[in-house]
Image 1 (cartoon, rainbow, N blue to C red):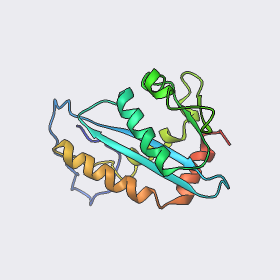
Image 2: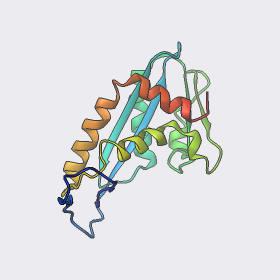
Image 3: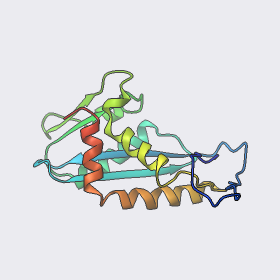
Image 4: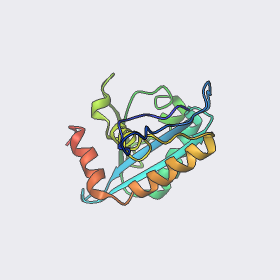
Length: 166
């Protein structure tokens, strides 16, 4: 849980010191969806954080079920080729009758995925130089900053525009 360290400002002669714990294999995994409204004016950010667990097909299925409840209109999901996304229990949720479709990004193309820009922004801006001593604190900080990002429509639009999908 070493913090991502970037150059920062400090008074002359007062070197900033970040205290951290080493050799910690604890983690916070995230699953995220950026949803563009049919009129392409509003973007919604949905996310779930999982402390000390990985994103599996069961987690993806549960997240999609919650997402489908929130978004009643026809849905096209564009996502990367994580094995959990391609699992049979996840693919079974998509049916042509319910107007739910899924499309995969080409292999090894993170620059096309706008969600990568969301997490890159969070890691390099609000969460940078923040040493946390336990994984619960990391999850709280991440949740707080992700929730505040939900209301920054111009920033969310910039993630979509930068991904070269539009």
